[in-house]
Image (cartoon, rainbow, N blue to C red; front, side):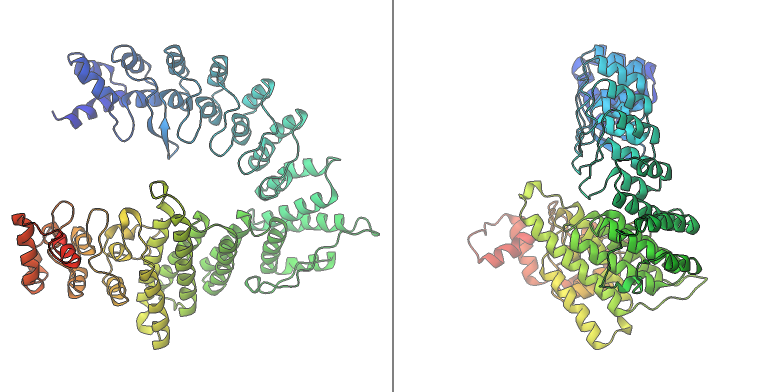
Length: 625
């Protein structure tokens, strides 16, 4: 057996609880071999981590006592579809609810406060899924109840959010800080309000919890209204401490939630009526709605109702009700709150489902402008908007059996492409201020991939463009190329246009890559055909590596001057990477090999010294071969 096969046997036996198989395999091996196999990681996890994750007590004891496994060695493990990085064995056992294993690990010296890479402790993991017995055991063995994760969420906060009354009560009895704030300023009261835990919320108030505002200006009352928890809203507005303005905002916001989330128009009108009556309860000092002078075209210039008579008229037009909900939410929450843009996009998606694509695009464009004006560049929320546009445009331009294609207005797709390229430019400037080893290119690369799909979608309608529109499109493509953006592994836009992996951008199909149309576009506006990524692969290498490779893309690159014999880090040429057919099935390679190329390859093959002996440009040419 090879080393990888040995590791696989040990890992699978530990994961599946096969102690006898594990003993048969390991008992006759040397201590050095055992140590190596037990501490090796498969899919990011060690055998001990998998045994703790899956509750195999006998295997945990065997790995610790006989094999001397490192009790603190961390690894990757998956819970509820989420991958947890840097998880210690004790964290895995606590999260999975295996008390007997938790006890063994603690008895053997496991650190009860050792955290994952996101600073989550075993105690917090037990609080998350309500393992009260483990919580009490860990606390009895010096677990710190106040260690928060990287977002500043404490054990009390997560217990409140998940609705674990017994654990929350226990932590409060231990003196947990009831008013501690997370990084974004929310408290345990916010978590109760957002999850609908009224009984826990009342308990927190009895323990001195204060109604604080978070980073978005949200109180627990408004958080409950956003989430649609009517009983919590009614309880909080009935308290003497609740100011009139807060009651009004909560009722209006709850009405908006009933429109968009619960689709209960009569319920929404009821809460809006209560809010309106509250506004005018004091005839001498009414709380009049602020007048919004600047109307929003995306909302069809709708205005908020200001009287009970106007409110009663809303019931005759559900669309007016929906616009009221958007207006109310934007006024109370403000543009910075994620729910403001979320529900604008949600309403647009419903219009798209009904075939009203113009209304959808107008609303989504308004939400996108709002996001780009508030959020920092490369925000996942803004990227989600760009991807939604790409998916919508793809749906509109794809012919289905039951319906024809829809015509996309050039101005619509051009507006989205322009905003996406501008976002990428701002994101690149932001990243340039970070030291290279610390740069996280995940969001930058994802946006660049989305832009590739937008380019491809524009290419779909290119034949219907006027010469002026086509010129504007190519100017934008030119700007993109000459920004010299580099994604993961230093991939250029041309690399991405040649890669099959670029196809996978979201849950729904958009465009298929590699795309010869996008390749030709990028080359036309100046994309260097022999640009290299971190592995010295040119776009032609990438195109040749696809399974199956697309001959049209290879011919487009070669016709634009790509070198068929350029070598990557593994000394492989594009010709050598093609599988399933040969280069001769695509082109005649002799038509793309020059005497200069052959001479350069000979110099490299024979080890003839050339660095410093020839001009720099020629030196680079030889190095490429």
